Image (cartoon, rainbow, N blue to C red; front, side, top):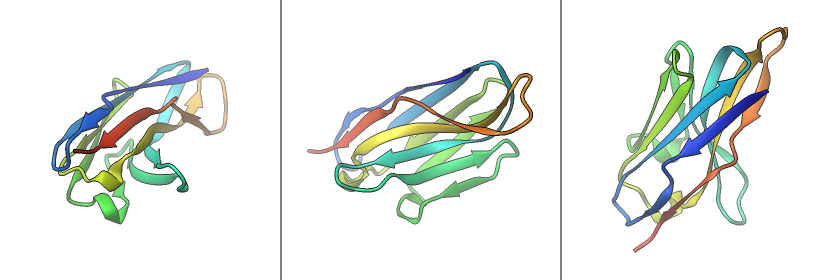
Length: 121
């Protein structure tokens, strides 16, 4: 199995910053993509930021210029630096990874349990 463990959520005032971390562990042969999705109350889950093992990032328009994603391939770890946070960034943030398990032949999607980010004064 592959496990994703997130950390770094919390309560922050508008304009503040938070840094989310997610480490993947288990029987991992290779990781293709890691990233972050979020789901706010009453809204659909959306992709916030993803990054390939080659270092190519992708962001949803609403966070461009404010969030930065980075990844350490050797440690199977991804970070999301969130700056200039807004109340509309409030959501549960889920870590995501597309990986191949040792002994398997196909990619599979894996998810963390989520970490709450609340932006409020």
